[in-house]
Length: 433
Ligand code: ZN
Image (tube, rainbow, N blue to C red; front, top):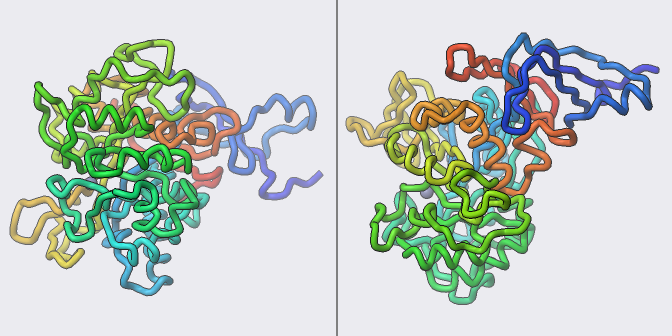
């Protein structure tokens, strides 16, 4: 019987696979219709073999990288809303496509604090959608940073749009508009500051909609952070950035990494796996995940190392790129500022050495994380695959090579000790790099 193109069965051979926290040598992987499959049923029930063999030639095959925080790239910012909808859509596609060559097969487009008019225009365009080789990396729903954040720690966010949540979830619905009712289909992560009035009380309602609650842009005390975690927050946004420095008497948001007495979730696919530093090594870790920018600039390598050794299974690598990422050397006007991009891809305010946001790529973050922490390669890879998938509660579909998961795959050359992206598949389709 002829096989239709969509039904085609692929078999990867001569691969080294990242499976169950280990690299399995000389292995193979089967996929069909964009999903990883178990070959046994094919042999015994359908008497079928693979239609196409993909020779990995000894490369390391790992799940596609997931970036939960990216504001834009290629001159595009996801919070820009003034262009016609067709232009905005084309811009999103351009970024989604551009990310694939770094091995990023799924991402949360991130929107800075904005007013209701901006959200009502941009959020419907950032709804969850499948990835493809032609269409680009999968969109996992938007990550909205603010507007329920601290003015003291606003970073580049506009102070006039920041607000409180006296009326709890009602204020969230008012701020983001009807898209928030769709839950994680539309909004996958909200970054909020636990100390802002009414915010903690709204967390259970947000979690009930499947939304991941991340603490950030905050000067909260440790007690506020613990309260937010108890209510369902399971992430910290760009750890160390936009929060007070660590203070030993009240360690604030950073101090939650040292928490030993938070309620331990019995079962949760949205908490870090147990590690050697977990309070109970047999249960998911009650401490939140933490996004960390590993460009070597936004966070000092020593700080990355301290975070990793205190809570290894909580690390989530994020690029937090701004629109200058991916642009060739030259001068640009981005978000009203004159920017110079140098030959290394670094973006600076014109005539200065002031960074105009991060321009790091997710594969570079993995290399840096491994270098800074001296962790095993598997752990560096999991910080960009399994950990973000668990954070979002999508680890059945993404972040592992388990049967039934999406065939988002990155082939890596690690022969020099540093990973290099060689081939990328998204939803079972090979991407032209
Ligand atoms: Zn931020």
